[in-house]
Image 1 (cartoon, rainbow over the protein chains, first blue to last red):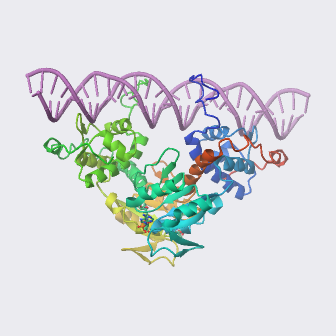
Image 2: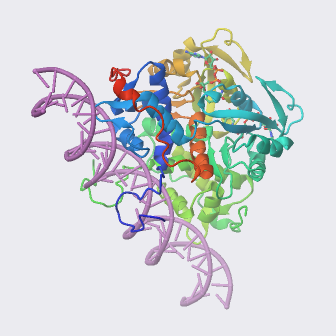
Image 3: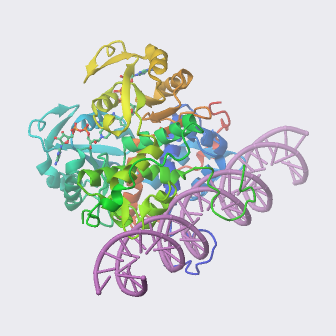
Length: 251
Length: 251
DNA sequence: AGGAGCTTGTGAACGTGAGAACAAAATCGG
DNA sequence: CCGATTTTGTTCTCACGTTCACAAGCTCCT
Ligand SMILES: NC(=O)c1ccc[n+]([C@@H]2O[C@H](COP(=O)([O-])OP(=O)(O)OC[C@H]3O[C@@H](n4cnc5c(N)ncnc54)[C@H](O)[C@@H]3O)[C@@H](O)[C@H]2O)c1
Ligand SMILES: NC(=O)c1ccc[n+]([C@@H]2O[C@H](COP(=O)([O-])OP(=O)(O)OC[C@H]3O[C@@H](n4cnc5c(N)ncnc54)[C@H](O)[C@@H]3O)[C@@H](O)[C@H]2O)c1
């Protein structure tokens, strides 16, 4: 509210260091590309190089980077190490974030075994499950602990990120417990829409949805003019016959 | 190119049954919400009900559904079963799609054990891995087969969707093999940017990126006015000193 | 039969994102 | 030291996505 109250069509009125969501979502990709270049011994890279490595258009990449500041050198390009550090700082992965995983079944085990976290700014501090048969099991150098310990762990380790890999049924309940315990960011793998209060960020990873999106495009590739234009299929009749149960869904 | 070549501000010139990507990405969510309502014995639901269940704004939901046709009844709402069928048909999950999974490590095992596919329009026809020690292992009612069998399997089972859960290193090579074998849609879990020819769709699921996006917002929540405005940090000096290795990244 | 009350489908306004294009800045060769 | 060359940072324009707001259409009650 300090400046830019004129509300003119001008530039999107980026709120004080506010970076567009679309850009935020690409920064990690750039970060990874830079790390790869760095590991390959490359010290300097142009926006074209980086864009290729990240799989985006170079104009977009330059504009994205311009939100962070002017970290390139005209006529030369970007210093790989320097830019990498700046992006890491902007994202917030120069420090380590403590993470808990709830629901150590198929997927939870896979995540627990995954080594790619530590190297990327995250530290798994606890594996939690409600099943007494699982509690105590060792996975790598960690041990599955009882979900009841959640609150104590969140407080002790200053956990701000929680990962939900329970079945869909208990996911909302688990989510509520996480939020109540003080977790303010949640990554959800369960196929449900979780509701959280303002101030809590939530992202979901949903395999079925990804596959269905692929299926849609796949169908259009093969189908094209194959299917009858609009099948005008089964019973639209059922509707008028119904006693109109409608209305009350959930809340 | 048939009609609407006037290029006027008018409606987005939806190409013959072309549904906006953003809408396609939400249809699976609606489908799931409808299935839940259906299982709950609800026969009719308003756009408001559906929107709540799907976690979106009701105007958006109505507009999304309007791309499929007019399947609702004014003053009443949508017939749950009927709409569910129409969406499933539009996405293409009234038929089953054959899927292969390549790379049966931590994540591949989890996916192989996951029961949520069959019920959603997908059928896993093969689990493939290059590691001879894994080949032959039974997972559920399937057996891990050698990656060399890929081409035969793709042809025999008309596989159009492939899932990559190998490490990042071999992912591009695996991807190329899949494409060469005839797979035209790929879901990639490896943290690399895969390049594919036109006509092949690719989607990625990237855990680290999701966590980093959460971290960014998390940092802004806690930080706000805590950090020094622009740390103006380390060596931008390094740049001018360098022999300017720049240029040749990859290709 | 006619009007009251809902709820859909969509037109229009607004906001965000992508990409082309170019001026400004830096290097390098002469 | 100057002009050619390279590559960034930014401006402008167009496309896409979201949300509001309301007329059209349906049901139900009187
Ligand atoms: N496995 C996959 O490949 C896969 C793929 C896509 C989506 N998913 C989704 O991910 C989630 C987990 O899948 P999975 O295959 O690992 O399931 P799973 O059944 O193997 O594991 C779920 C775990 O959660 C635990 N749990 C249940 N209720 C709990 C509670 N209230 N508090 C704490 N822990 C609890 C269970 O004890 C179990 O260990 C599911 O929602 C599933 O739909 C899984
Ligand atoms: N495990 C996780 O939770 C997790 C999380 C995020 C991302 N990922 C990514 O998913 C991928 C798989 O992870 P993971 O933990 O299951 O790894 P993993 O090492 O356990 O499994 C990889 C499997 O791929 C097989 N493989 C290797 N090269 C192959 C080839 N050329 N052809 C066929 N198969 C081949 C290996 O034999 C192995 O079985 C990785 O790219 C990883 O970065 C994993």
